[in-house]
Amino acid sequence: MRNVPTLLRREWQAYFESWLGYVVTMFFLVVMGVTFAVVVSYLNRGPTQLTAMKILFSMFWLPALVVIPAITMRLLAEEKRLGTIEMLMTAPVTDFEVVVAKFLGAVALYALMWGVTALYVLILRHFSGGQAALDLGPIAAGYLGVLLVGQFLIAIGVLASSLTRNQVAAALMSFAVIFLLIIVVNWLTYLFPGGALGTVCRYVSPFEHIEEFSRGIVDVRPVVWYLTGTMVVLFVTTRVVESRKWR
Image (tube, rainbow, N blue to C red; front, side):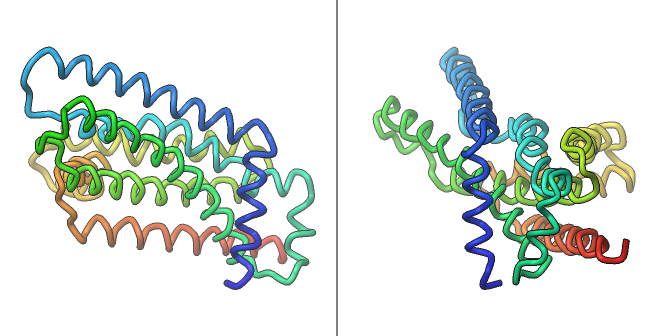
């Protein structure tokens, strides 16, 4: 793993040497900024049990559906299309190091985007006069939740990018899987509230997990679920990358 920092710098530079990193980051900040403004305006109408940050965390699905496919689609697909993947693999690095570096590069960009939204917390604290109602515990847990869910979905995006040379195809594949895991699973929890299927869907539903995290509940089970799932997906991605040697 000693080559990962060097490869990670290469990936980070690649995002901001082209338009992709800037456009995706701007899209995320505009969408979340507008959402935050609308939420604050709504909450100012009267007392409610909801908080601005809790609602903001519940909107994680929108950047997940759009931003994650955008930042992962080029990671391996573009390397294959340009033929640079062969050059990269002949360097003294392992396939796993390459996959992990690309994964961490996307996670770092995703974390940076969400990190900027911490400014909303400062805005809320300023205009609330520093009232104790602004509980930082659930806010910190909410950020942990969106990062855990995000890094798992990013791993899926990296896997999709390893399966094709076409960036658009990679983006569509990751979008389809993320849509299934977030939206369809959430629908099933409402369609089958009392059955075994509904129980399973609630157990794996990112919406359920984000709801718990945003209330300050950090359960070890979803943490293990997302970390284990990420490792499994990265392992499969490494195998896909290695399979090129046998073609």
